[in-house]
Length: 414
Ligand code: ADP
Image (cartoon, rainbow, N blue to C red; front, top):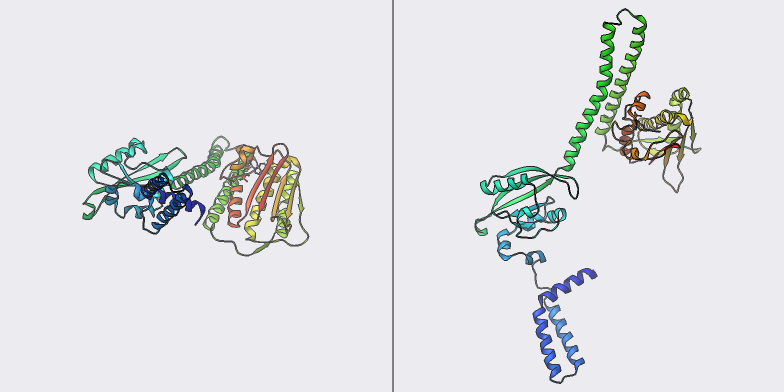
C-alpha cells in the first residue's frame, strides 16, 4: 500500500473507532491516577489502541462518498450512482424540486464538486436551461437544448433532461437525469466546413466575375478593337488558369483527407527526390533570378513514404521560398541525416521573412500573409495546408522559423 493510501486508511480507522479510543484514554488516565507508572500505562494504551485499529480493517465498509450521502437519498438512488459513474458523460440526478441528489464522476471532473441537496440553479445560471428543466419537472416529458459555457473555456453542450421512474422498491419515485453531451468539437468542425466552403466560393467567384466582365466587354465596347481583344483574352487565360489551379489544389486536399488514416506504402530516397525537385523548379527559379542550392549527403537517405506526395511537399516549399524569398537570390536545401539527430530537410530563403504572429496560422486553408502578394505570385493559399496534410500522413512535422528582414526556414522533421 502506498504511503498516501496508508495515511488515508489510518485516518478512516481513527474516525470509525474514535469512541473506543476515547474510552481507552479515560481508563488509562484513571490508572495513572491510581498510581500505575506512566510508561506502563502508555505501553498498554498503545497496545490496546493497535488491537482496536487493526481489528476492524477487513470489515466491509461503504465507500466514503456513500457514507456522506443521506440514507434516505442513498436508498432512493439504489444502483443508479455506480451505473452513472461508469459513464463518461457528465450527469446529475435531480429530485422533483430540481435539487441535486447525485453527481457522477465525469460531472465532478468537469464542473467541480457540487453540494448534494443544492438547487440546480446554484450551478446552472442559463435561463434557457433552467426553463427547460422546469418544463420537464412539470410535464414529465424529456427535453434537450444546446448550451454554451464560456468559462473556464468555451464549450458547447447538448443538455438533456429525462424522467427516470424507479421501481416499486424505490417507493415508485420519479427522479430526473440531467446529462451534458460535449458537442464543442462537432460545432468547431461545422464552423470550419462552412468557413471553407465560403472561402472556396469566394476564391472561385473573383476570377469568374472577372471572366464574365471581360466577355461582356468583348461582346460590347471592344467588339471591333483587336488590340483590346488581345489584351483581354490574355487576362482571361490567366484567370481561368488560376481557377483550374485552385480546383486542382482543392481536389488534392480532399483526396488527401480521404486517405488521412492510411499509412503510406513504399520507400523513397530523399537525395534523388530533392534533386528532382530542384530540376523541375529551376526554370521558375531562373525567371525569378534565384539559385537553388542542395546540401545533401553523398549516399541515398530512405524514408517510408509515397514519392509523388513527398515531391509535392518539397515542390511547394521550394517554390514558396523562390517566390516569397526572391529578393534573397538564393534558396538552400539541407538534408541532415546524422545518426544521432532526427532526419530533417530544411528549405531556407533569405527574403523578407514572415512576422511571428502569422507563423501559427500558415498551414490553415486560404491563410495568407498578404492576399494580394499571394495572388500576384499565382498562389492559392492552399499550398501549406496540402503540405501539412501529406506530412501528417507520413508521421512527419513541419517546423517554421522566420525572422523579418532575414528570411524563413521551413523544416520537415521525419
Ligand atoms: P500560397 O498559395 O498563397 O503560396 P501557401 O499555403 O503555400 O499559399 O502559403 C501561405 C502563405 O504563407 C503565403 O501566402 C505567404 O504569405 C506565406 N509564405 C509561405 N512561404 C513563405 C516564405 N518562404 N517566405 C515568406 N512567406 C511565405
